[in-house]
Figure 1 (spheres, rainbow, N blue to C red):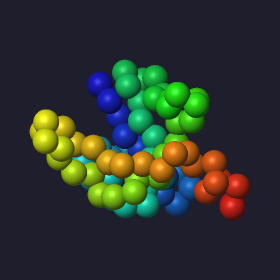
Figure 2: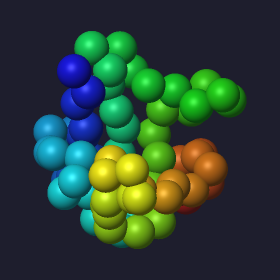
Figure 3: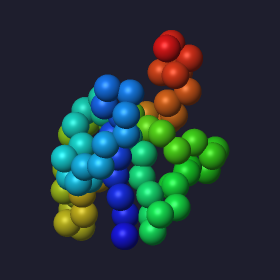
Figure 4: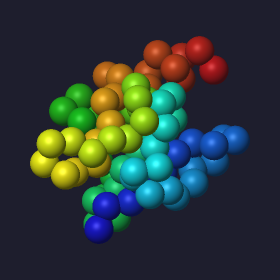
Length: 73
């Protein structure tokens, strides 16, 4: 089972993936294991609201990593 969490008020909050909104900082777990990209990053920024693609699957476009955002805080 996949779990989605957004960073809200410095705390991780579970939400349904399809509820992701543009600029949400989020991470995913797949059967309890943190999902990472090919570079090992696990926190992403949604570039748009979640939408249903042509295959009927919800998705969001993401920025490469959260590193730049974290560096500013």
